[in-house]
Length: 188
Image (cartoon, helix red, strand yellow):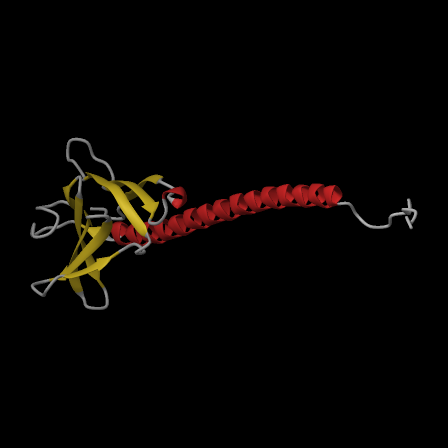
């Protein structure tokens, strides 16, 4: 009536299955955490790279214009007999445009979280343009202009102090502080 129970079991017990599933679950949770960490750091690195690239482009364009600035003999843009005008938050200078054969009054300034540039040719209307990507926020901007002083002769130059960060999640914001000095090619 009673059958003899075989000692040769080839299957898995319930306890062995539960232990193996638990070990597998812990390994997957650890792998997922590591994967998320890597992805977030990659996003942060990409945001930093994009910010630096945009700033590099801005500084290159600004450098080209500032180096070609000339003395304002009329005083309508930078001030009488100055190469650079404005204050700590706004930089104005005069540049001669070869194509239009006219002088352009150029002004860089911060408005909200954006860096803008105004260009005015003679008495025509001013055109305003953004100089940075919409994914970048300017948190601080200062200009320090040094004009040619008869008492202390020096090359006219501008020091630009700029603080920017990427727009997005707080974890992707990489604040950058940039300082550069650009001298004019203007010689008398």
